[in-house]
Image (cartoon, rainbow, N blue to C red; front, side, top):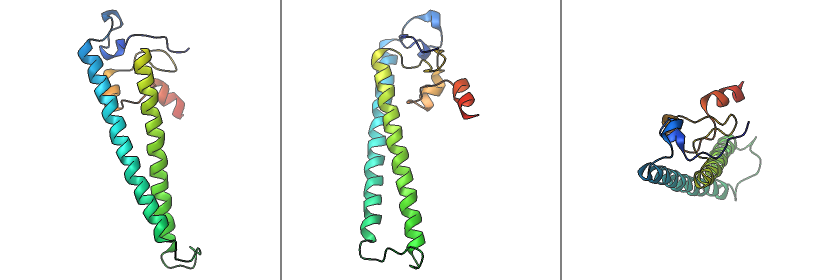
Length: 139
């Protein structure tokens, strides 16, 4: 079952209560914008770190196995690269959440169509699934 367009009823956790108030909508908008800004800052920082690691190895051998610091540099490059990839995925999730916010489906589970609890949205503003669907997906 796919989520239907619901006017953010999950923010008040009562489907009978109607749509969210203007203050609640502004709060969600601020939260998503803050999340996007911090994620972009993290991407910028990680990109600088990654570029610095790559630049530091320009004049060294490409033989990580025999270079005493090769394994350390390779590990560091892989670690920062993985963090950068995760930050980019998170930015995409934040952008999808912003799209759901604009079309009125933010706060509705993308899988089962049920309301996502306000506490979950506050902790994970970019989340698109309820706890039940997330845990079923991980099994």
